[in-house]
Image (cartoon, rainbow, N blue to C red):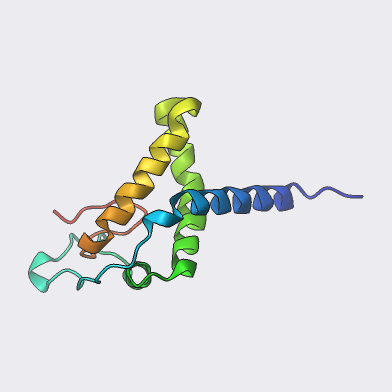
Length: 123
């Protein structure tokens, strides 16, 4: 029987995303979508949210659970890695959970002036 380390890593990442989804899923509540930033609030070059991010936020605001799972799958592991580096292993999970809560609280104010992942700000 052969062992594929990449399959184990993919399985671990999927399990982590599923666990994170279960922990923060209740935070995702449908809300009224807002329009992307007005032309007068244009982002700095290279910082505007990609169309995919704007579409994903729209789906999240509409309560699309698949969009939520997609976002968690993409970002939970890198967020946890960063939180471990900053807060240490003991506090990392709490930091990430608080961060996800802030993300979902702020979705209704998303103006498309920055990408979801890099946090580049246009102001």
